[in-house]
Picture 1: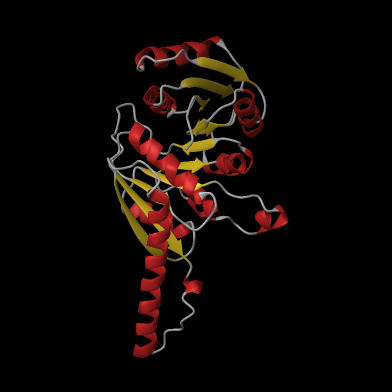
Picture 2: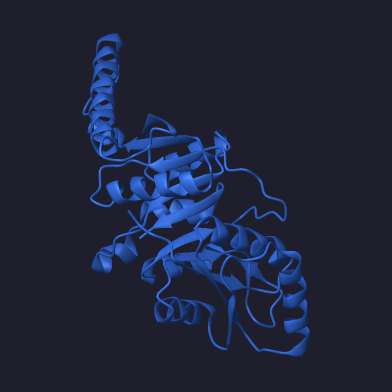
Length: 277
């Protein structure tokens, strides 16, 4: 299970700077972690004054804030800083490209998730006042990374005081091997779906039996559809506060040609998203 000792927040002087920082301060305190802020761009008196004003209004940090000012391309600077500072969690909110009135998270997140060595938290709805985390949705697909992702989700649930978690098992329609064209084939498809659902539920239960999570209500949900798109839609419909996904796996040229399931999530972020490395 991952431990969160150092957190890096990308500081952009966007309209969301204050709520992004307030969220980062709260998360750092909940994990009792050190918080490092990096601004990609020029350092000047106005920026320092604006930043210090927001910091003075935020919760007191358990550990002192470290601020880094660095010129360069956002992706390069953030990745390099995260590596040099030995960061466990990278928080990205609305990032501004220096001197451009353009705020974005998805496009930068795509590049960073492919190269970052740490987990990434994408904030799309930061708040100055704390909104309790009531429901976490976690991918439960059959993958070697899933056990670690579920363990990390439980860790976050405990620190965020979240009592409800749903582990979503995305199953491809191709696994059914049944073409529905009459009542008989429909019954076959229904039975096949139930068997697949039971198989996936048992697989997740085997993971959970070794995790201490008795204080969290955890249920499983099987969904048939396109990986990434299905769980993103589910998280949106269920109004989840956090969606937790496996980090994409690099696989040479195929990785660049065919979209990973995380691409569907990043194209239209349904809620705050944690990508577990």
